[in-house]
Amino acid sequence: GAVVSQHPSWVICKSGTSVKIECRSLDFQATTMFWYRQFPKQSLMLMATSNEGSKATYEQGVEKDKFLINHASLTLSTLTVTSAHPEDSSFYICSAATPTGTGNTIYFGEGSWLTVV
Amino acid sequence: LAKTTQPISMDSYEGQEVNITCSHNNIATNDYITWYQQFPSQGPRFIIQGYKTKVTNEVASLFIPADRKSSTLSLPRVSLSDTAVYYCLVSGYSSASKIIFGSGTRLSIRP
Image 1 (tube, rainbow over the protein chains, first blue to last red):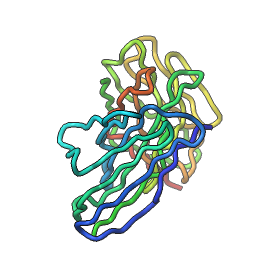
Image 2 (image 1 turned 180 degrees about the horizontal axis):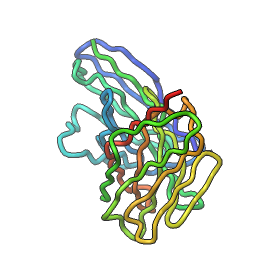
Image 3 (image 1 turned 30 degrees about the vertical axis):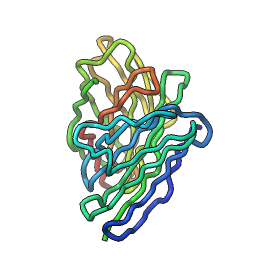
């Protein structure tokens, strides 16, 4: 079945540095991908919609200059956390949808743990 | 965007059937209902999807009444490994449809 893959699975970075997380659709093309963040024992919170070939659209309260999203191809979206701080430590998850027999099925990546020290 | 409401938590025992109900009163005509399972430190995993009536696969059944304002995920004969958070999502047909997560249901299975 359709698979969405993220890399890295976990990353530790120093405060003030930037870190990039990749999201790939492995066997289908995705013109739209979504980025979420999740804190422990909480639900997923939508951060932004990544649009292939155009600017991402961000949810209210999400800083676009801090969370840079690039969707340069139909199978790859990247999230760059710039000037990371400890409060950016979280679990980041991406998703993409593909048509299936019953409609549109959304697949999620494995998630990426970011720890800022 | 259709909002979903689920019980925050449920408990059951191994071998029992578990039914988790989700309310989505403002579901749109073109929206589908999909259920996901999430284990700690993993992305949500697809369980089942449907539009109306009943859908069954090898791991679960999904019951959707005629008005589609709710849906029930049925897990037959649960085991300890079914302990997880279960999310009900409502989404449109377009791949660009945004998904807003509700709280999910934290299911705990006991021996």
